[in-house]
Image (cartoon, rainbow, N blue to C red):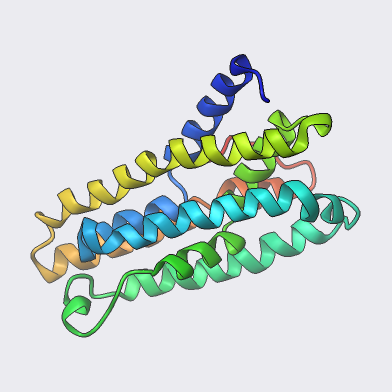
Length: 210
């Protein structure tokens, strides 16, 4: 069992990594403002489920395989960043609340869970937690603790961002305000990619997670 003294820095790591701006949080903020908290809740649950599955699979298999393939993470960053740029373009062009009336819907649990595999920050958090806190001699127990702590800390953090969106919804009544909000969210989503993209460059700075 992971020592309690180790769980404290693990919880701090998960809190800082999860609550700071990133693709998941920008999407939750936008979804909360567009659809409300209740309809965004499957999105929140999907992120937690997808993150737990990712951490478990990385801990037991994928990380070992990927470590032998030097170009794996570079390819991952390129593909996922292109997808997120496309997603930012869709958000910027969105009509916000008016799309609800036209049949738009927030992400479902499965959608949000699958999205974690193309989210560079989700990979960074999972790998960072495993590398920093999982002991090879206690892998099963430590991975279990990491998944539980990340889920326990992550759910309130994610809910907070969706709640922020719900508060903002009160001020997004006009089409101009909605469009400005969506463009702002798209811009923040693009900015959230910068730390990972900069680290891909030769001699790039090692920036903290956004």
